[in-house]
Image (cartoon, rainbow, N blue to C red; front, top):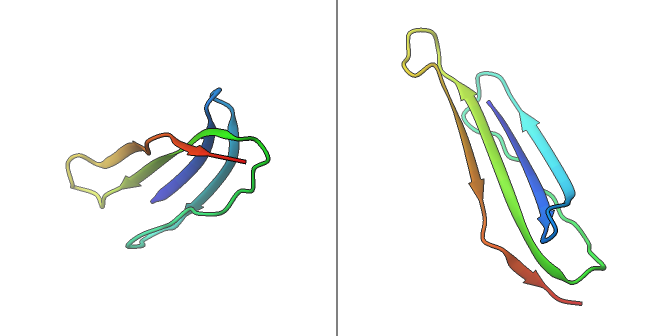
Length: 74
């Protein structure tokens, strides 16, 4: 199982990124903090990937989860 999380600015640029993975685990988390000097809209897009044991259908999953845009002021 793996998860990666990216912090995006309103112009589409990636400002920060975190990743975590594990084998034979119940959950993984990718989190962090970022200090910005630029006011504007930001959002996080998380991507989650995992595989199931042999014999399961579907054999895995891939999910993208974006947050709403949030304005961060000066």
